[in-house]
Length: 239
Image 1 (tube, helix red, strand yellow):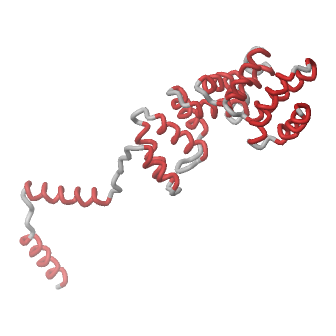
Image 2 (cartoon, helix red, strand yellow; image 1 turned 180 degrees about the horizontal axis):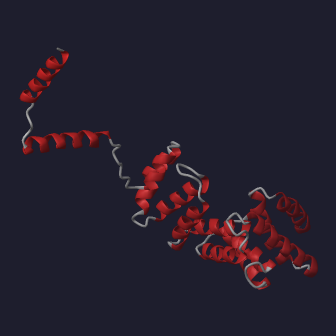
Image 3 (cartoon, rainbow, N blue to C red; image 1 turned 180 degrees about the vertical axis):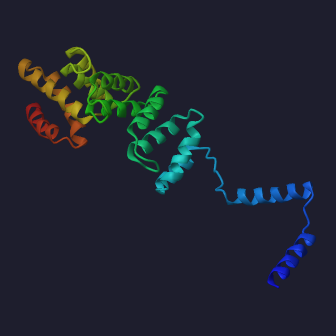
C-alpha cells in the first residue's frame, strides 16, 4: 500500500516540475553570482601615504600593510618604506627580514637616506642571515651619508678609522666626523671639540680653544655630559 502511495507521489512531482528555459536558468545563475560576490570582502584601494599613516597610528596594521602595498605599486618610496617596516617589525604581516631588506633597498635606491642607514646598521650588527657584513654596511652607510644623513656620516667615520669594510683612512675618517658634527651629531661635536682642546694644549693657541668651546657648547646642549664637563675646563682657560 505504502509503495503505491509513494509511486503516485513521485508521479505527481514529476508532472508538476517545470524545467526553466535557458534564459531563466542564466538569470538564476546570475543572481547566485551576485549574492556570492556580495559575501566577498570589498577590496579597498588606497591612494596616499597619509591614509597609510593614519592606519598605522590607529594600530590597524593589516590595513596599513594593504595600504603600503597599494601605493608601492606606483614605485612610491614611502610605500616601500612602509612595507619594509611592516616586514621588519611584523606589523600586519609575518616578520620577514629578507623582505624588509628588499623594500629598504628599493627605497634607498630611490634616494631615501633613512632606509640606507637602516640597511647599513642591519649589515653592521649581523642582524641578517650570514652575520656581519662590513662591506655591505659601508656601501649603504656611504649611500646614506652622501644623501645627507648625519648618523651615516658618523658611522662612516668609525668604519674608516677601524678599516672595517673599507681600507683604513684617517683623513677620510676625520672628514666624515666633521660632516657628522656639522649635521648635529653630539658625539661627533664632542670628539672634534676635544681634539681642538688637545691642540690648544700643544700650541697654546686660543683660536683652537674658541673652536673647542663652540663645538662643546653645541654638544652639551644636546645632553652630552662629557662635553659639558670639558666645556667647564675650556671656559676656565678662556677667563
